[in-house]
Length: 296
Image (tube, rainbow, N blue to C red; front, side, top):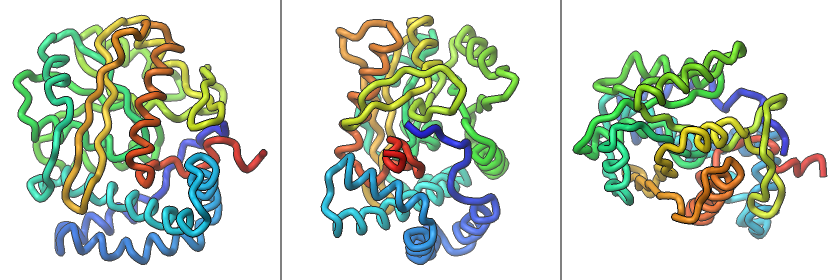
């Protein structure tokens, strides 16, 4: 698996432009702009378009015409999730409707008051998790921490935090000095909850290699080792876009037979992730050579 280079698509200026459109003209006006933006990326963002091509052709076995259309839609969905993230953070979440599948499992985890670990991925719009928790009006309160994995995302979250209304999620930023590891242990000791998007491997860190969509992939071992060591409740969390203004929240439990070993937790994670990718293939947002298809 090619390692992620620590930078996601988009720029702070681009985020601010979309935020301006949302505030002045509404969410749908920003969607209209995305029509051209998505086409631009399809044609001129050769690197990400090529890796998306391999995702749809090799992993999902799409035909060539379906692959081209899917790449465009993939860009469009990604842009929508960024716009929605701003809109929900800025207080426009009432413009969206939500379905909740597994809300009782989240509520039960929060109610135990012992903390927990939620595994997600760069699939759908996991970044708006806290706003979904608020909308669902859970019976029990919990402090939720989101692990931020790159500098650009950190800047984005700072901007969202400055414009958000009522959000209480905290962020743990990965640091070169590894101080984030101590922070993760600290929040779990305080019976708080951590959300990991645990699907991206970065060169130089420890990893576990497992088959994913038909080819071996390196996954960062840290989140799975932490979950195995702490033996806290584990859920697999996905927030998927189903229409322009509707999201579906999934919280899935691990199977009863899952052992608290890093490799076993990862196997359960992959099993759930593959199910969600098959259901929502256009919302996989890893725009780099994830399976090392270019080298092979």
